[in-house]
Length: 339
Image (cartoon, rainbow, N blue to C red; front, side, top):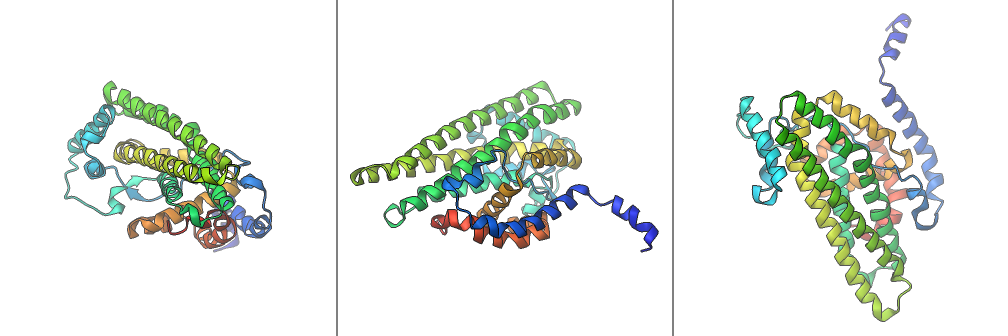
């Protein structure tokens, strides 16, 4: 390439990609320094409450698969509003002559959906909360469990809820609703969307309350007499399981109707605009640990899901994951390994 063409080539480089690359290299330098600092109660994790998962962009399809997307749940398990959205997706699928033979691969299941970081972040909360409920209390150190609980609730769960509350749910109620109306969707559909999002917001409040109750129990664990610790441990197991169950229920609704609705309604450019809004709410340091959490949660998923993750994450970030896990994630989450 001639020298005269290089400015034009540089002008075409995505500025956001360049900035992220520079920050990742900076992180490589600073990770070792941060790993040697051990602040109380995960202070370096919770300092920026805006931290949340980076919504890495996939290139997979959901737009023409509302029926397959809904296969995981029966109509009886969906709210009436969610059933309205499900019916709308089925009808628009038929009207667009999308009656091709069933395709079961994950690639086709999420075609034209690009906000996978939201799915993976939610999944990581479910996996971690479930692991907390299975901790063998008699074999673990109280301080180790407290560190893990703070990571799961104060960092990962609160990070997810921050992005949903401040970015994703408002986007569903404004941009997605407006696009539905533009496409001629009846008001029953837009009202159903508002109702589904409202229910998710109520579920989120209930989960936040459960998280607060769990952390209150955790903080009292090392202060209680020995004969009361068995009761507290049973309470923590129940609270953790409830967080996992309620978050899984939210994820089921999102996967069944909201993700195919977004894929059907919003263009790639519109979804990437949401991604940029999320990135603006992220802290660089927090996003490293969310990325590790997502990668760990996907270890128990299908090979196709892991391939999607690998294709969606920048190569440099993938090379950094083992380092971040060893220096930043494992010291907080070691007792939850293999649970």
